[in-house]
Length: 350
Image (cartoon, rainbow, N blue to C red; front, side):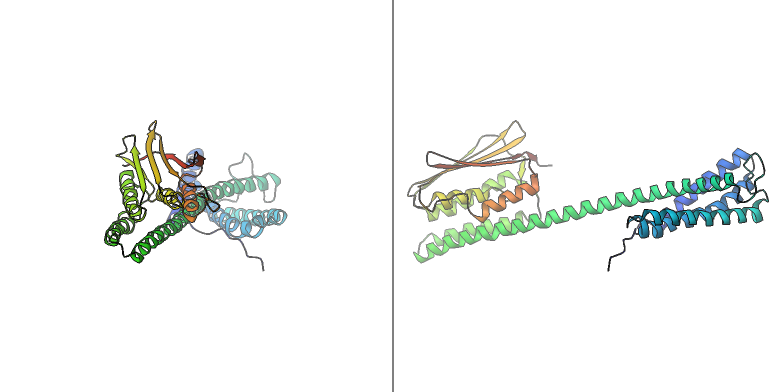
């Protein structure tokens, strides 16, 4: 069964009262001053507004959902004409019995019921009020619906971003625990140091960046350095160089946005490599773009594919959510070096 579409009554009652009260007062004063007859203007507008208001809401909450939203325009037109005819009968009768036997005193001559000019004048007046009130209501409803949709999109964005962040963190700690397990099998004296450094990393993830959209780049660099120290305990021959070429004290970045790139360098650069070299370059370009580049040497092998892995995939998804297409993530190989270069817009601390 087809669901009936509805226009919700989602504007506060007091706002409706303010609108109709203001409109009535304006009309009362306008026509009272025009005819210099305020008692007549009050009674005339009282009759008209007692008909305007039901017609407007009948149109909005009955005719429009039943016919217009279902694209039944002929039925809507016919129903509106019948409604206007009923309004004409009521207005004419109420004016005759309450206000004046002259049903259209504003005209230059006396009119009788059902004269074509009188019918047209009444219908045009009703359509004017109907169009104006409906336009105001539908515009406000549209604005509220647009805001609601924006809020929904924002919430969906946050949920999706949080999902990706939650994927990245377990992935990282899974790799680190694997490293720790490998050292424990060797009864290595490095195990306590790894545990301490891992606790610092977990503290950063669980507390320092919780609920934050951006974090200082300096803290991210510290986080990366702690991670590198853990990896150095696992790899016998590894040389890591970090170059910070620009002032980055007030630059902020999405949390954990670079760690997957660093993980990738260790994971794939360390395969069959007895002399792993990693270089990290970070600089600000024209005070607009943050340039993060990481290079690692590698040994060619049949299974070597540094582009694979959930970390890099999720990093790209997060970048798209945060920056849309306003970022650059490129990779290439050159002389047995794998190079990843990420460029993102500069964000500054408030």
